[in-house]
Length: 241
Image 1 (cartoon, rainbow, N blue to C red):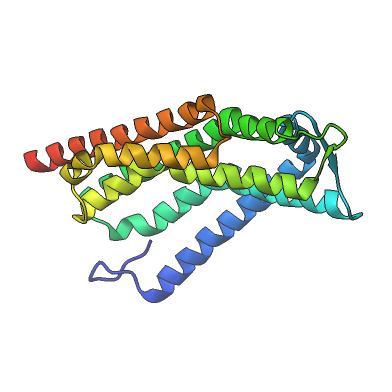
Image 2: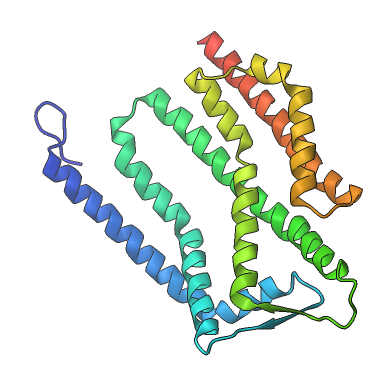
């Protein structure tokens, strides 16, 4: 980035740099989306394999191709995310102090890892449990579960996003601590109340059996405790400095 004699970039240089970063991001997403589209059939089959006892249909001639395009674009964005985040960082980081860069890097890295862990948790545990429960709860043997492909994919993506965001709890609490909105001591005092809330939420979003509730609640409790530990480390480091 070019700077003037005062060490400040002129607005035109900012705009040119922004355009350059956006072009790189757009082309990267385009390339990865095209590659993903070539494997869209495998992607759809993989998502369908999560369900047992369902028969899939599409009710309009163009539905299959539209869902393939949607999946390809979403996959393209996910695969391009390292390039997207890198370019955003390269555009923003020159304006940050060294300490701000370190804090943002830690928060960002932790956020990405936790979001991916949430998606993996949903893929291997929550989604199969929920889909199996819906099929087994059908007490009328004459009825078959026919599901539209677009509706099914929409539900799957919703689960990915929901649990990806739930796993961001440590990042959210850490940001609250850094901003001075709520300290670790506050959450420690609320621990019992938080665990009760977690159990209630787990009971709502999972099938009504004890095993499903436990499988969902335990990781969320671990996330809460991890949040407290990360906040403890942060407060300890800041006190030393």
